[in-house]
Image (cartoon, rainbow, N blue to C red; front, side, top):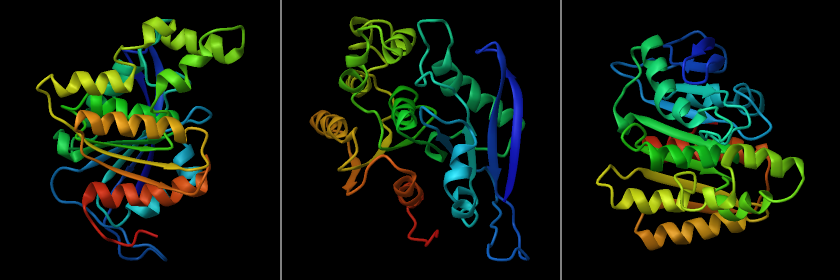
Length: 268
């Protein structure tokens, strides 16, 4: 595998930003790891971080490079700061950046990346799990699949309750979403977005979600799962003992890769 640290300018954000990118490489002499190359266009996973993190976190907390080494796929890990993958009320267009500009830039830099929706997966944890499902539901012509690990899927309950008051969280989320009235029913509300997609005639993405039963976001995940079932979405939904920790996400991202690629390879 090749690991690239890419610094570039975003016209959408109006500033320099960065992403770490893993590309496949055929290798035979590496000790303890076999590298698989790829023929033709590359399937690409956009791997999103959570609230406290940046583009380096999946490499620092998991063995993501080793997991994908035998799969022949690309991985894009962007930084999106504390913006919940949203065009914020304070004017920073992180949703437009992540859903439109970033895939275009990546394919300009790395022309071997496929532009077919079925070859592009959005995945992430916590805030990034919300962002991943948002990409699947809100940009399904670009992302044919989306996977959430411990995601903030019920944004109305899990974030909406923070919008009032004088706390740091209240100020943060008002800056992102505005008021509860602005958030509820908008395209930033995943359940409203899912309902809208069902009648839009646009492609319906494949969806995956896992959450630990001791996670503070577990009840929100269950509410989102039930609502999505009522809408008729086909999903792979998993729960098991666990809370909001990297030891679970490290294990479950392997399951996400196997689900997306329909493989039973041992990635450990």
